[in-house]
Length: 290
Figure 1: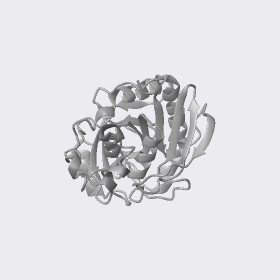
Figure 2: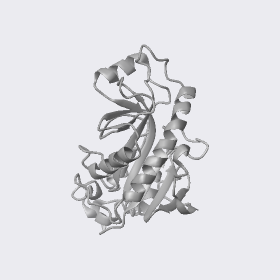
Figure 3: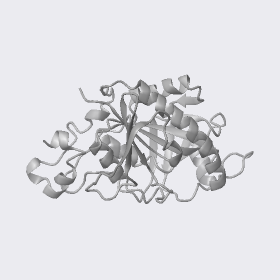
Figure 4: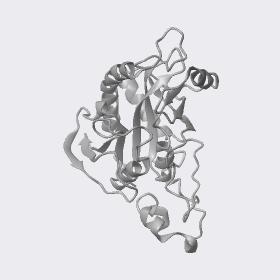
């Protein structure tokens, strides 16, 4: 069995989790470049926790400039088995109002400028992504939301756009008519890379606005997003702290095999693999490359 270590990638609002003890800051080097920041490591109850501010402290990195590969790699090197992504989002549903949480289970990737895989020339791998969210981790977040009396829905589809601009009205209406539930800028390729690293992943999408489709609400802007995001962050910190306190000591095997995603996924013959790339994959794929 593997010891459960909970990772959190989010904004500054969830930086100080209730009950976090034995806190230390730990820089971890990655062969994939610089992560967004140093890891903030501690424990809540008996659960080890590692937090990484996605945009760096002070919000230095835009969604397009984040080094997603380095971020996931350092989480893997820190021993993270279960990763919760916390992010602001816009809503395409009237009933998913600002302040509401959506525990999404599907993603649509509309990004185009980001490195989306640890693999490629020199070592090719294809991991399954049909069910990108770990259902047991997602259910634990849902149970914690009920216990903390936080309004949420279980399940939904998040469309991830490149940004940095918010949607046009035509885009917003298109995404709504396609049946998507929420929109954000950071879930991809984060979820894909977590799957390649065999880390069980789940998203807490915190609604801040109605994007720009809603005829009775103002178009989304930074000021309105920040105001609601600050309120959401307090609830998110309570929620994650509850998940950490209730997390089993041993990592629960994932029903959709997120923690075993690389088994049978590597296509390149061992004799044809690029040694330099294999060295960079020591943390992400070390379990299967051995």
